[in-house]
Image (tube, rainbow, N blue to C red; front, side, top):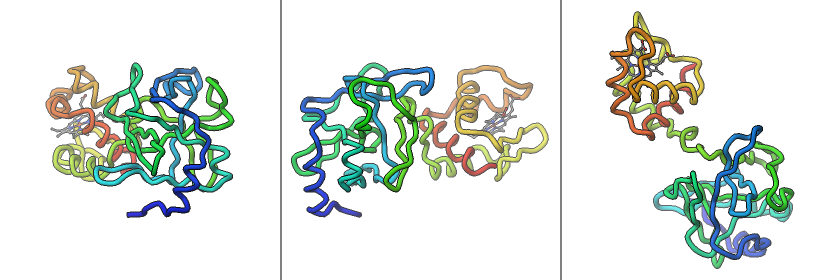
Length: 229
Ligand code: HEC
């Protein structure tokens, strides 16, 4: 496990204090960006692809530690348990502590403000390439898009491959599920799970979908969209 050196910890402590209270994570909406997460003042929040998200037994690792990076992106701090606003799943919020500072995490990822987004403004971009990684505006339904590919693979082999084939190409009345994005796959699985009749062979697919949890669907959608091209 990578740990923060005392030098990088000291740099983090010198970050501008953006929040002095308990932070609430809320959802905002725009035509351009859909639903995205903000702090209680409406400032959009981002995650950085080169950070390491927290896991069950390790804190998140922060990779934005140069002064240039800190000038552009500020971690969202809190003094106590972050609160979930309407539409935010409280189970996805967490905290990572580095010395005296506590940062808010979402699905384990440290959250940042874009410093140029002063006040409660619209995000400038949903995706920014900078400082050796990608900054992504956090979609409020991020969970659905970020399934666990490995878990999806295991589930697929056990429950889906016998009909749709090992590579998703299908056969006879079992349709091919290749070349689809994660949203399409999860949408279809949710519709079957909800009992909707889609094609003439819905009866074969519906009982399988009925057993899937939201997490199963996200994991399957991540695996199928990534591997079956
Ligand atoms: C018993 C065979 C069977 C199993 C097992 C099965 N499916 Fe299906 N699946 C079907 C059939 C048949 C259809 C088409 C149903 C219809 O006519 O609406 C289908 C449709 C689908 C579709 C929609 C395809 C499209 O583009 O219309 C997706 C996505 C899908 N299945 C994914 C899965 C996943 C993921 C699993 C494993 C959890 C799975 N299926 C397990 C038989 C199966």
